[in-house]
Length: 105
Length: 282
Image (cartoon, rainbow over all chains, first blue to last red; front, side, top):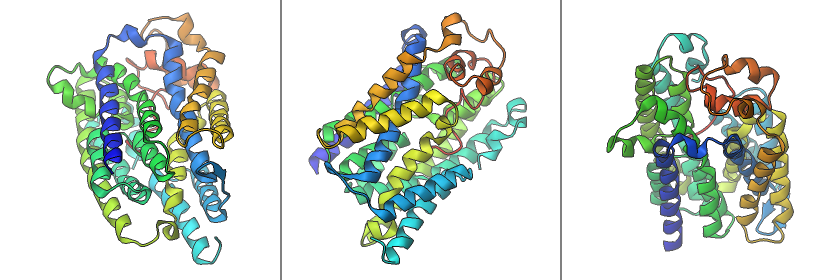
């Protein structure tokens, strides 16, 4: 539990430092278009990776859970229909929960 | 919700408080999802609240909880979460010009430098409205996000099996929703997303849990190097010399996002230059 607290506080400190740095460092430091482009693309790569890993793996193994994948599929449909963030989450969780309640495991 | 921000009139008529409070309330309630996901992942209620109070940047918070849920390395989880927070540095760079925060107030302002406050501030036509918009968004979203986190964390702790409520899908769905607006903006974004997922999945059997996700950043690096931002390269260091970014963004996706950070300092940002405000969490 102590380890988790350290991770929580280190994440908080790091994220805060990055915000403060943006307000404080001279504009020239990050003026390179490539650096800006990289920082724009980092969330795209990391969040897609997180989504894929959490949806299809457990530890080091690939685990294809039908209810979970169906929930994610429902989220994609909701996103295509331009649903707001929270509705996307509710649709995804609700689909998985409903399938599990119906016996899909 | 985000309709208040999307309305074209908002770009001309300053409505910073309405924009900020509307977006703050709408996005803030998503804190319920984070609180629930964090406690399902094994964090305590107070650890979930500490992240929302101190880190206050949704993607990083979800990411750390996700790695902890998978039983991954805390070091890798922390590194990934901080890496995700690096975009806030870019927002800070843009906001510094508009808000001109002074010490020591800057220490408080810094906490509020996130997707939504940047979107509202940069959508305002003048500096005063931008400052008001920032403050309104920050205050409303901070309060709502933290109350919602507490509610979600307590709620998730009371139910027996997180899986029976589908809470294991909350993380993957939230990540997808967070980047969805960016996936719509250009081909490079979509390629980077696919490559990032492929790198992470391909290395999952081999590397400690949490590390594959950090390796996905190589896809972002490749994307930044392979598709150089042409417009910015032609106009180094010039601010607001071109027309509104909408004109370039809609027809030339690969050129738009890179040009936007510089030009949007003085022009109302388009969907390309603003953060994904409509669906993202802080």
